[in-house]
Amino acid sequence: MALDYDDRTDFENADHGFIATLTPMRITKADGTVVFDTTGYSFLDGPRPDTVNPSLFRQAQLVVKNGLYKVVDGIYQIRGFDISNMTIVEGDKGVIIIDPLISAECAAAGLKLYREHRGDRPVTGVIYTHSHGDHFGGVGGVLPDGRGEVPIFAPQGFLAEAVSENVYAGVAMTRRATYMYGVGLTPNPDGQCSTGLGIQTSQGTFGLIPPTVDITHTGQQETVDGVPIVFQMTPGTEAPAEMNFYFPRHRALCLAENATHNLHNLLTLRGALVRDPRVWSNYINEALEMFVADSDVAFASHHWPTWGTDNVRSFLSVQRDLYMYLHDQTLRMLNNGMTGVEIAEAIELPPGLDDAWSTRGYYGSVSHNVKAIYQRYLGWFDGNPSSLWQLPPVEQALRYVETIGGVDTVVAKGKEYAEKGDLRFAAELLKHAVFAEPDNAQAKQALAQTYQKLGFGAENATWRCFYLTGANELRHGIQSTPLNLGGGMAAALTIEQLFDTIAIRVNGPRAAKDSFVIEWHFTDLDTVMRLALSNGVLVRTVDPRSKGDIDLTVNLTKLQLLGVLAGKGLDGLDHSGDPGVLARLFGLLDDPDRSFPVVTP
Image (tube, rainbow, N blue to C red):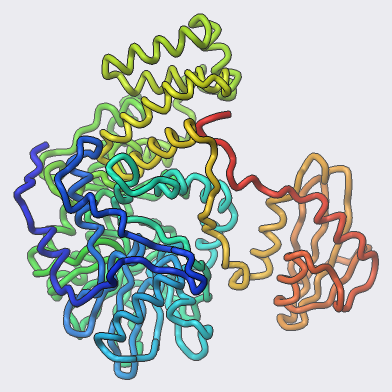
């Protein structure tokens, strides 16, 4: 590895086109609650502290930059107002908003800044590049009165994927996201130092207005407020539903989140579907073939643009090769019998990839991406019979500790390994001590110190946040989880998706003792949804053909269903049968623990 710290190209590009920003950079709700604040990152203006990896410190200095930037005539970006970018394209009558951040307050602040410098233009179109919450959650900030007549474009499958990722597994994903983004950490040399992909995540009002126009195929052309756009579908890349697109009038290429200035995740640490690096690489290559010869600039939903046709070609070529190299070499090694952990330890990037700033593992890492590729092809099982039926963590820890000679001995050994610099094995030993005796203060303190040292050395921002959040919770207990990745989306869900959110909360063992049938007649949708509890499963049937005994029938609208699910009951609704069935259903639902333990059992 030969990183060139004298190369200032990224800093020049990150500053290019700067117009203005907020002073101080602090965004609040109407009641004064802070939802985004970068004032704590002043330490990035000084010399690098010993507690931050030098490469990560450089990346943090880049992603903390914020404000309104001109990309080319007619295209502007709001950067550093959230973890993601919001792009503003000027049309004939107003502006097209690309990816309105996570929070409505941040998107509104960005649009206000744009209007102060470019005029009070109305929003005439919205584009969601893909199905992750930081690219649609703030839509209420740019369309505060709802969609109205404004068209909203998204790749085919967007809504289903947005629900799958942010709602179905939303509680567990949100809890892990607090670790991944260091939500409970203070920005300082010993704490949060960016996420690698952006400086931090906002914590404001999250919502979703469903798209009205599906982009279904590569080459599809749409004209939005007089601006022609050519789309490239890229499903299965950074998100299951994602797309790049090209502005021929501006000679500008939007790369969504498929090519950013770091190695991205193939399996994000907060949890998601495993992404396919082979198709990811192929779609980058397709973009090279389709658009780059006619592009003067490429910009994305994170980080800063790349200007110049040759520079765009070079940047995309390296990104293309990066994902395919990881894919092909992992397959080569797994077909020689190596496990995911072994491949992650052995693989090395060639100099042409390892020495490039845009391939560094600030957000994804070679280590966890290789394990993700292994998982994609071979699953969780490494083929060794001893891995087939392992004990759960606490039972395993108790036996390890007993074998080694008790918690005190394990802690002493863990400290020895830590003092020798073998922090990885020290963490493994001390983890068992904590899981065997979770109230043992000495074990927790020793593990916290080890996690802290691992965090200070990590080049990957999300690894740093995981280690330091783990250390913080070992020392101070579980912190509350302010994030809610699925909150604010209910109104945008289909009725099938709404009932899915109920079905995944049914306590199967208790529900197996009961059975009933409820029919919901939606007068505004001309649709019937039958819910039948059978063998602990809530079976959903749309417009059922079969007849049978119905315990409860309810006539209502989708909006009224939201009220029922919020606990308002059947008051004022037309219904027949036994209303007590609804109480039986709700009585079988578990309320998930949004702050479940991670580093303790």
